[in-house]
Length: 549
Image (cartoon, rainbow, N blue to C red):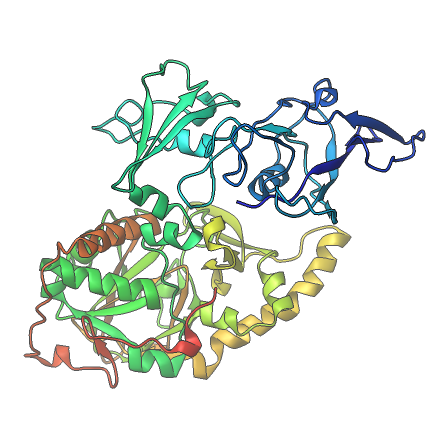
């Protein structure tokens, strides 16, 4: 473990005045009306800070390179990260942290200034009591130190986690701010036991936290955390040529009766955002059965299931014969449905081909400045008809908030038919609108580019499933004078889909899924889209289109 050097000076903005806390021997800062200098006693608590800030206490740190009885004064790199995270003080902001850099033993003289610009947390001096144990961090083997509160909060014992409900029996805020590891014991099987001082009230000295080896492996990196949630694979972006050769379809019987087949199709849906199921029975209940194979349906004011067909005086453009441009459904809601299912029951009308476009691919083609504007400007959507009044605003590009997936797109929100007025009162809004329109046009041009559009005329007995937060869908105009076009649809939320996907992925990881048996084609319904892929076949993702978002 390496340190970032001896703490030399901390500058704090306190009630409009600059206060410098520095050690003896550090060149002095002039004491003017605007600044105050407070001396930090060597190898002593920062007592001067206590009157001004909460949670300022002497801290104890250790370094395996040091003798366990030695007194040292340095900031561990993880502690600086903690310092930047900050605890709320009564008032004041850290302006900078100055240390000497280098190893705790070498103590090089090079000065390093750390601008953190956050509210003041605890400041430390340190006296080592035992290797592997600190007040804020616990060293586990050769891994990076783990925060003591994180470890205590993650305790998996039956006293902390109810064995039946799997729910916690205490709150994170119940953990005392000065909890520390009393001891750390590493076992031969890779597991670790930690004992605590100043534990959660109600947990006596006999309470220990025992962590299996897998716990530390899972929580040691961003990617391992994502792998544990089966979210490490990035979506595969596509245009017309890519999806034409990679479109995956499954068979209804295998999908409904074989968990391995279901998992493989859901994985393709996770990666590409669109799949097809064929040989679906001609029943108005079939789409509901297909969706319920994944989980609970999303009920909306359209109902649990709904029909897409031409009707007089339609309350939605989808229920007409007109061309329906690329869009996403229900963006006028705070939480639009994640996945849409459309089962083709009748399609003898002229025209009416479905069109799809990968909005993630379109976003990846934008200039960085365009991408930035679309991820910050919120577009209003509304539905005010038939006794309903919905309204919500979304950014065009919505980024993931999970720090483990920083830089990845979570959703795209684009639905011109249901878009509300863009300009709002005020000069600032007008200025932002002017900057926004050029990127907005660029995005529209990308999603509507013929090279990026996949057009497919659904056949009777087919069901298309697509990610409503990623894949835009639309429809060509059709003529019912000599035929009929009838689709039946429903929605499933993203959380429901991901839960089912994770459960099946875990079964597969545990070798608990039977092999897939795909029936041979016996009817025209199984005819293969040119170049398409059958669920279960191996794939080689196009490297150039592997998502970086």
